[in-house]
Amino acid sequence: MMKMLMFGGAAALILSTAATAAAPSDPQIAHIAYTAGQIDIAAGKQALARSHDKRVRAFAQEMVRDHQAVNVKALALVKKLHVTPEANPTSAALSKGAAAKLKELARLHGRAFDRAYVRNEVAYHRTVNGALRDTLIPGARNGELKSLLETGLTLFTEHQKHAEHVAAELR
Amino acid sequence: MRSGRLGLGASAAVAAALALVPPASAAPRVYTVVIDKMRFGPAPVGLHVGDRIVWANKDFLRHSATAADRSFDVDLPAGKAGAVMLRKAGAIAVACKFHPGMKLQLNVAT
Image 1 (cartoon, each protein chain N blue to C red):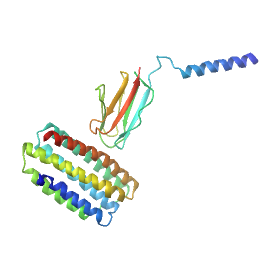
Image 2: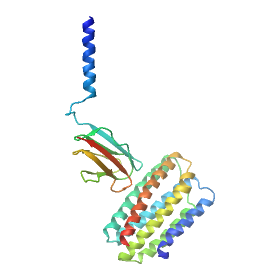
Image 3: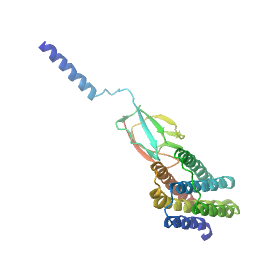
Image 4: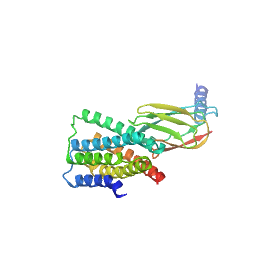
C-alpha cells in the first residue's frame, strides 16, 4: 500500500515544493503541464500493454486519448504564443519519479498490476489537480494558457473520479 | 379610407395572434447545443417531439451526448457535430459517457 502510493506521494512533494519555490514562469508552467501529461500517456500505454481487464483498459484508453489531445493543444498554443517550454527541476523530478513507477509496475502482473496502476492514477491525478488549482493556474500570466489549464483541471477531475470508481471496483 | 385602415389593423391583430399561438403541427425546429471547455451549453427552451438537436463539439476532446434513457447516444469526436431527433416527451438527462460530470437536462413537450 505504502509502496503503491509512493509515486503519488512523491509527486505531491515535488509539486508542493514547486509551489513554495519562486513562482514558476509561463514557459516553466507549460513544461510542467506538458510533462505531467506525457507521464500519464506513458502510464496508460503501459496499462494497455499489460492489462486484460476491460475497465482498466477503457480507463487507460481514455487517459491516452485525452492527455494526448491536451498536449497537442498545448504545443499548438505555445507555438502560437512564441513560448518555448522551459525545463525546470519540478518537471525533471516528475519525470524521474514516473520512470521509477513505470519500472515498479512492470514487475507486476494481472490483478496486482491493475490495482497498482489504478491506485497510482488516483494519487497522481489528485496531486496534479492540486498543483493546477493552487500553483499552476494562479501562476499563469497568459490568459490562453490559464484557460487551457482550467479546462485541463475540469478534465483531470473527471479522470480522478473515473480512477476512483475503477479502484473501488477492483478492491 | 377609414374602414380600410381599420381592416389593416384587424388583419395585423389576427396575424399577431397566430404568431403567438402556433398550431399543434408546428414545423419541427433545429436547435444547436455547443460543447466547449468540458461543458454543455445551455439546454434549448421550448423543445417539442420531432425537433432536432445538433450537438456541436467545439472542444479539442472527444465527447458524447448520451441520453440516460438510452434514447440516443451520439459520438462526438473533437471539432465534430452530430444530430439527434427528439422522439419522446419528458425530461431527458444527457451526459458525456467519457466525462460523466458533463451533464444537461432536456425538457421535451409533446
